[in-house]
Length: 87
Image (cartoon, rainbow, N blue to C red; front, side, top):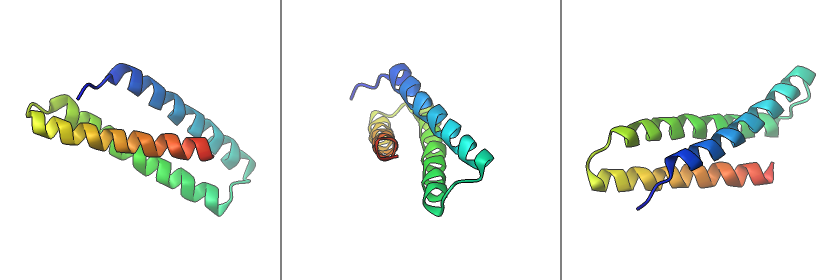
């Protein structure tokens, strides 16, 4: 299973930066709704999980373990992209 880490990391970092800019603007204006706060919390949780998996992936040497981590990373990235397209 091929993994283009640089392209994927760049894309996800861009999404992360947009999410943070939106969250910061809403917090500054004190206009965030409970739904927005829940979505922001979910995004932050996914971001932390993604970071942990990327760290594990960079150290993984067993091909089976790498495959599991790559699938988990893809799942998280898909969830983040889906949430981004909705929000």
